[in-house]
Length: 502
Image (cartoon, rainbow, N blue to C red):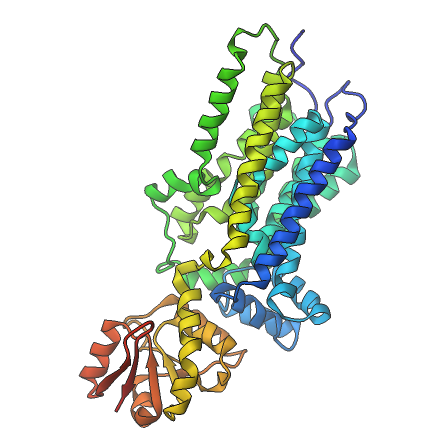
């Protein structure tokens, strides 16, 4: 077998012919896997309370009008651009603000992205390897964002659609170029770090650049697609950066850079080891099958691995924010590249590909099913547990005549505010700017200009001391109260510390 040509169009390879047909069983498997993740995501959504970040999304979506939403974001009331807030505003006005209703769009977006990635890999290889691309995604951090009301599933879906347009449509089509730019632009209004989605395409063309050769229409449209919305939203991004870049909780570091890929693919090294073992067991080293040439789409897919690296540079130089989930847009390209690589090496050894597929599908499904059985294990920063403890104590505090429920923990405060039977009594204790300042407290103060939230300083606490219960105070806060002449009595020490003040 002769190697395939490696210098072909970045979209549909020249001379490729028609799209490979998919066997009916592969379509059924892809649909079944997607249905499984949709159903389980909905179930998990129904058995989780909102947590801090999701409540911000809900509160901003509930603001009176779009102009107020824009002003709130311009006041650094959230880290996200307005695209997802607008989406949730429209969705929730139709379907309500329950946990299932607000998380359902994420589940649908995740499933759509899975199927788009499957179709892209299927067109470039075959249906079996399209399933491998889909199944690899289920072993990543992606499923978590299928049951959370945040923009990451949309970020992923739009990234998958952009890759599909680039890899599966003709380069000389103006409609394809425009579509590519528009989809990348939509991703940017969902998350600022989606600007980095253009990187693998730009690096690919730069590696093939010749003097006086113009960039492809898709690359030009893609650059415009990420630049225009970013320019419009620049005041919002700068507003948050000015206030929080110096003390954002997830600063970049070389340790975080070293671990970012293991966070994107948890247990990825284990799965890779299992794949190698399976391949060796199949004795593929003795195979005489020729290896096909690398397709452009596979190269660009592997170049998606550059996105976290460049994201680290951006975080180090400007944003000071570096988290694995910011690079969820790299997943579709990596999954397609892996499917293409598998197809090239094992196209004459279907058992090897089938074994890889079974391993990935089984591992992803097992992890998802474990979460279905124990949704309480989804507990960012332990806040879900703390919130349930507080809600269990609320009736006792009410019987003790405590009219004001004062929180020292900003995250727990916002969650308690949302679920309390008396939200008007839930208050956040804040300190003077620059003294023990907590970013999650300040961002709530920014939001409080537009959405009803209450804040006290120590002087306010002194005025209402006997009617106040202080929830989950830190030792530093108790020391500050002591220095201010406020006495405290421990009412509950477990499961959540509650002190009465006088």
